Length: 565
Image (cartoon, rainbow, N blue to C red; front, side, top):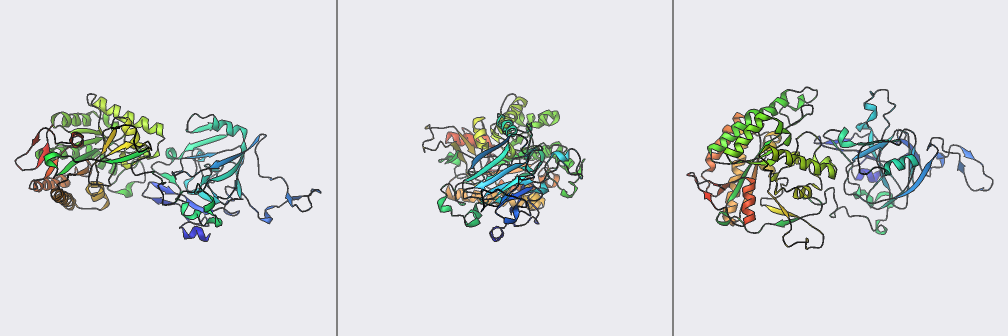
């Protein structure tokens, strides 16, 4: 218990689960005891009082043996298996299952403890309706650390995931039925199931916009139960390269720096306005100007505020940039292709004003990339690109921004395979860089392997950060963008190296009359800064790819610069 408290965890069930930013829901971690597991099962331990009924066998005078465990029920075909459980870097609880016709046993052997994610049964709760009884109660899900040499028999209906390593490789004896084992083994790929006494649900499907997770348990592994990790060679270091995301850029992806680029404009800051044109499902709460209204449906105030952006804000933003001779990149939710009025506006901006149309996922409400399986995410990317390409004369988008910055460890890899050339998901630099697939031998297989260009999408120039999070007024918001661009222009001029900054603008945040009024004034003032290049994402990509500036650079009378062709 002292070890758990030292690491910010709990030895009791009194603490509630923690909800972080309405996205990551971390279950409470407790040390499994006979008392705190009563609602989910029965603890197996060396407690001498655990043997409530004894049987007498004359051959074993020194043995105290209990009678058959009266709660255990494995129908007529119990199966006992041994499982080796290795550390997995992903601490997301993706699946939970229950069995109504059998109990299930997990006995931890060897040296290392295990984590069991368990939720109290809901199938027989009188306070729930029929639909709710088919789902786990998120408030009743906890993580139980079961030490080596201990075990637990879970009740019929207890929601659970398979045991998880806390760092070292663990060994568990699993007792269930042949029926359940065969049902699980018959699945071709991970997906929800309800047969063979195995009802399995995907947590992302039932807990909308909440990712169920457990905290990193490796910090306690060296001290828990006097575990000698020097004998456990598979124990990953808590500060090693193993993490929830193997690298910031995705599993198997390697960052490669861009060589000198920009030609005669190498001493400039390249400013890329990114206009987020987003779709939100009407039955799901979304970004809000008055969050306290997000309680009941229909919710019309915040939804109407978001809809206003695409109806009026986009027009206002596009006219503002047009008056300053600046083209933009619009990243669009592909579900919007069915909005004929909006699509007409975007086609006009693409064809008449030479805007770039990029991809912004299917929408900003449904299951995002961080919650999807590899096959689901691949299909979602393909569907998004195909829809947008079809809506814009088969001109498929080359630039991608993941909705809500929700990425998986495979997103970059999938986007590269899908033909995306520019990614806006990463915010950790002021210069563009490439991502390539790293095959682990340092050679990457090809002299010129396929790559995707990452353009830095700063949090400091994103209207969500400045307006919705920091609550800046329209005037202060525009002033912050102006200061940011001016400083980068100064640094680029002094270093004679190009810098890139994207301006993340949402139609419902930056498209208000007050915001556009102040942003327009900002653009006028920035015309006095001579080393600014206004460009689309694809124009920056083309310049980087060519290792020289575009064939034609037009200098408007204001001395600001934008790319032409």
